[in-house]
Image (cartoon, rainbow, N blue to C red; front, side):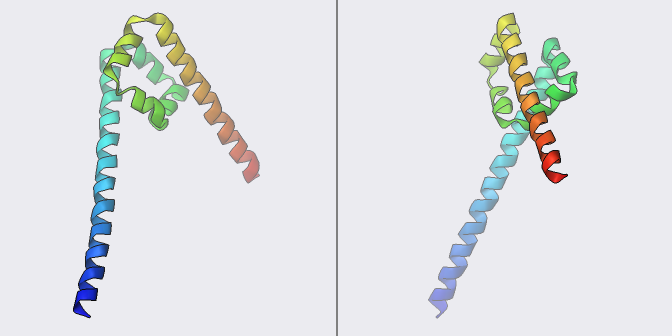
Amino acid sequence: MGILIDFIINIFGELFLNEGAERLEQKRIERKKNRAVKRWIRHYEWFEHLYREEAYRQVIEQDDAIRTQLLDKQYMRQLDLNLAEREAFRRLLSQKALEAEVKIEGGEALAQ
């Protein structure tokens, strides 16, 4: 009976430890993304102007694909040097902002 109780305690202990480690890893990645956004605001004036616009700021803060993309230093360097690439990034932000707006309006329509 004691062996069974030890076995059950070990299983639950490992389950909680793994979930805690995953949560810590997710928080670490989120902090890394936040630091990257702040760094780009300080280093690139064009990015600061994008970030000042409310719709773009919401996309940058909430869209995980965009935030992951902003971690890539080579991509950010390419955006800084290539105006066409920067414009394509702005259009991507606009598109995602419109999609988010449609989802919000659609959700409000369903709630009414």
